[in-house]
Length: 60
Image (cartoon, rainbow, N blue to C red; front, side, top):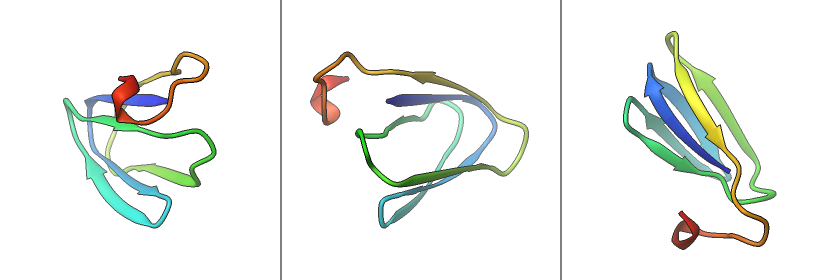
């Protein structure tokens, strides 16, 4: 899955990695990756599923 942040701010945990994302950010969530997403302010994000069989950043 890919998430686009349109407005607001997110704190994410992707596997063992902690990161932040703001407007204009794109986040790639590979299948079966443990993750958590927290909006630290009102946020609009657009989730987009990947085509079946796609994996890794090259699939974007």
